[in-house]
Image 1 (cartoon, rainbow, N blue to C red):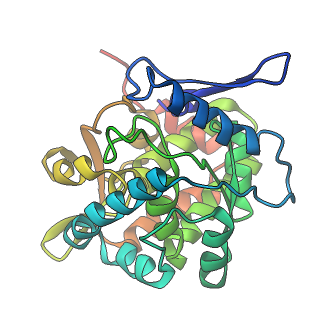
Image 2 (tube, rainbow, N blue to C red):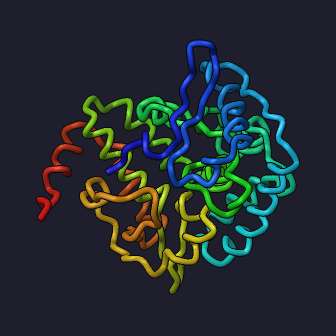
Length: 298
């Protein structure tokens, strides 16, 4: 199940104030001192950020802008082929720049008039309840760093391309935005960590890695798929199951690999009726009852 600490490189501050980002063993930037220093620099600007503070500006380098341009150029035709029309409508309405890495304030200025959402900065991991509480007030906590330049179409962790291209375009849809907000508001009702993880796992298999029927085709709407160059080529060959809250909330999965099991909504109406209504009504008792219905491990 979902363990939020696995998603992001840990960020620590030494006694002398030195910020360090601890990259995983498989990270392409692990042995690049310049990249590690840049990651620490970017993480440092948001470490002390508090609610209501202005979002810090990052002066991106030309190399970082080039990574953004390449990723946007390569993802665009795949979006046209594989993304659900609701995501594409949000993308068209939002109009993210393709020629430079946008500041998060720039993204907020584009997104706010559409759905009332805004972005704030995070150095990496945000505690699960804090992240979802922000979603409940229509604020998305986003990293500001970019993936390593040696693999501009791959990242082992969420970077600003995932957070903005994946989630920003999704949040420009009023219907997707409402489901995401409901997930955040659910966290405020939940007392047990087990219930909170159940909600986060349903979110993972819907707003992060959800797929949906459209006409006679299977399309993606999840931000994790639509920000991944490789996963868009592969998702239709995975095991596709119907929406199932019990399975979505209890299935084990590996965040470091393409998701082998995906859950299919038959329409946006069904997604709202099943997942959206679940987020809008879930409490500790309901989450516990659903968890109890999961089959025992063999």
